[in-house]
Length: 244
Ligand code: NAP
Image (cartoon, rainbow, N blue to C red; front, side, top):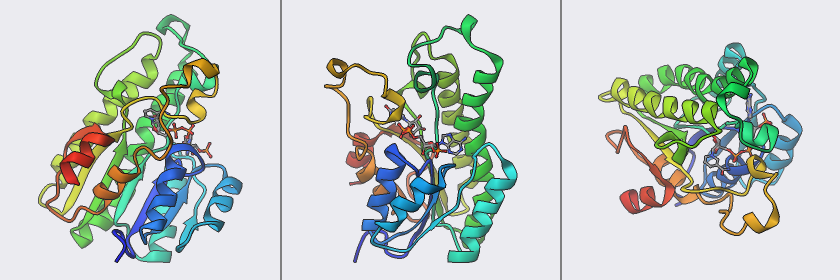
């Protein structure tokens, strides 16, 4: 029996990169996958090649109504949400091909990064929790970063968003304990070859990880039952050792 047979898993940021890789792996493991991001065409293409059932629901994670609609569509189609993977994310590195110090950052760019990486997670989590609480079962998996635990110059909004996400993960876990829902954060453990790093020259790409780097950890986290590990944050490899 596949590890995630019939589970319903919502993945945000499913149109490319790490999100796409997790969607494909979850489907291989028997899950029914809900793909959400803004680029419907790319998600349709991904969904066509999946071995199992899936649903494509375009939504901007910053838009509360769109998020509520995406979760309502999921419940209508599959009747429940077993796991939510909050993966959608942006960084100014990806937007401007370089680092930006605080005095150079516009209010608009600050808002974009914080709203996608942090508010979007709040909105999706708020929308799924009542359904998970009703069934006393569920997993929230937040995609963080090493920059949720340390800092670098030139990435203020991203660092702030991921530190915020670490706090939100712990609060979610505390509120959800005794209600059957686990909330954890996972990060790839290094740079991953996705659109975020499109600007890197070839000679700096040697150390870069493949987009499937979090797949094993994501499956282990999604397979957790009520009373699983909760409130923790660690790189994918450590999750594999902890839960594998
Ligand atoms: P990516 O290839 O750029 O993918 C980002 C995803 O987020 C896309 O599917 C994009 O879809 C979605 N997204 C962006 N803005 C959105 C919005 N407003 N509403 C809905 N979806 C939105 O980046 P990635 O590297 O796979 O990143 C995935 C996660 O991993 C992020 O949380 C990132 O912080 C984290 N991470 C990445 C690395 C790395 O080295 N790549 C390292 C540590 C952590 P649309 O454009 O179609 O909306």
